[in-house]
Image (cartoon, rainbow, N blue to C red; front, side):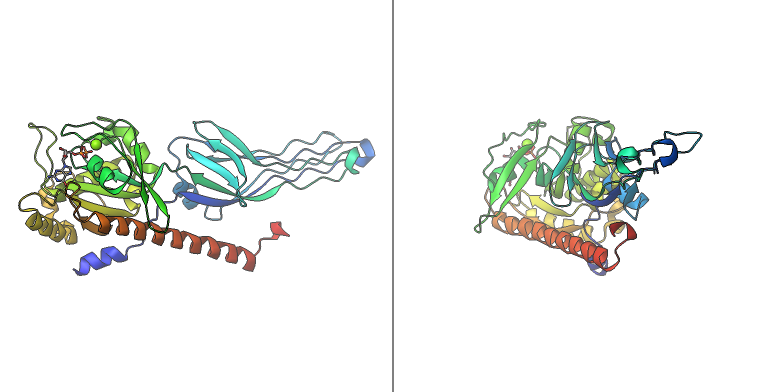
Length: 369
Ligand SMILES: Nc1nc2c(ncn2[C@@H]2O[C@H](COP(=O)(O)OP(=O)(O)O)[C@@H](O)[C@H]2O)c(=O)[nH]1
Ligand SMILES: [Mg+2]
């Protein structure tokens, strides 16, 4: 139990899906009045989409979150036209929207190499400006990962994801007892009494080996990246993909799902997550649920059940919710848990933004002046 509560205390959501940056174009160079020389323009700041970059990596690599273009060179007798300052490129993940602090969209980066200018360098001094150079533009910008849904369903085929989506939302996905029925994300909306809506995506099937692109592999995992939180779905009785593959208990299934996410991108494992234990209407379900809970509390003790598929870090679930998508058992409770989890996340995010703004007011950097 101790271990379980310690796990619960671990900070949720260290996955970064938005980032606020300070950007400033380079200052222009001085003109040379005597000879009519023109200073170089300051360098611009760009955001450029690049594969395999994550917002978290930007944050870790540049804790100051400041990006400044190079200054333009002054005009000199030997080089009357001052050299242009160097452009600064901020490499960011594909699939982000770049906005100003007040929400104006500067651009969408949807493919590798897409780029958007976020702060222009200042023009160099010339005879039109009495040879005085200008400073570059100064801004705070936000990089937001485009999300397809608030919650993404993560589970192997037949866990009952499509049935669950039907039970909790207005969606009408295909339900079948064979694999790969879902080919593209199916989004359902959950409606709440206070008119709040939450979107849940049933994602194309995940199977063992998805990280090496088996099945819908990478496509699936790419979608997972773009949901705010994860809803793991397992069959309380376990899972077997085909008669020649091994049978997995619900606990093993959870770890295998975790491992697939981890092998693809470790940060996915730190997304806030809930665990839905489905098919509670089946015989012996209650005993199996107890066993699963016990194993989740001490995963290390039971991980010898999982030769070579032990994740580096176990998934921490904010709630473990038993349901039956068929009978409707537990569905209302699940809806409340989903709501609670997202509300909690939103509150934390708002707090973090306020703190950051407060910090900026208390310790303004000299560039603001
Ligand atoms: N007994 C039982 N069967 C279920 C439940 N939920 C789904 N199923 C069945 O499990 C099979 C797979 O369901 P589906 O929703 O298509 O799973 P998916 O592949 O994860 O989308 C179907 O035959 C469903 O009827 C449940 O709560 N109880
Ligand atoms: Mg399905």
